[in-house]
Image 1: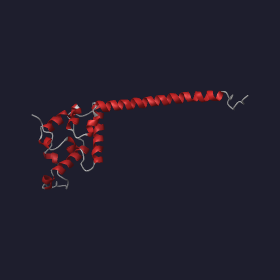
Image 2: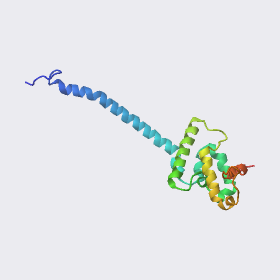
Image 3: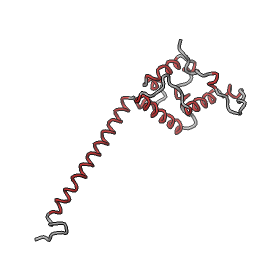
Length: 172
C-alpha cells in the first residue's frame, strides 16, 4: 500500500496535477487563438490594402487610398511626372534606412487616419514630410538653389513659398 502525502492520498496527486493543468491549458489555447486571429487579420488587412505595393516606387501605389487621388492626378499632369515619382520627392535619399523609416511612419499614419476617417480633406503635408520634400527639392535643383541667397535669418530658402503647388499642379 502507498503512503498518503501531506495533502491527501498518493492516489490524488495525478488528479490534482490534472486539475491544475486544466485552467492553464484553457488560457494557453485562448492566447494561441487570440494571436492567430490577430495575425490572420493583420495578413488580411495587409493584403486587402495592397501593402506590398508600398515597398515599390510605383506612383500607382499612392492611389490605393482615394484621399490621394487629387495629388496623384495633379502629379500625373505636371512636369515632374517625366523625372520624379512620389518617393523621389517624399522620401529621404541619403540612406535606405531613413527612406523606409519615413515610409513606415507615413504608412502607419495614413492607414490609421484613413481607417478612422480622421484625415484632413484636403490633405496637408506634415512638418517632417515637408522637411524631406524641401531637402529633395534642393538636391534635385542644386544648380538653381546654389544661385539663390539664403533668407535674412540665415535659413535656407523655402521652395514652397513661391512654388507651393509644384509637383501637384491644380488641374483645370
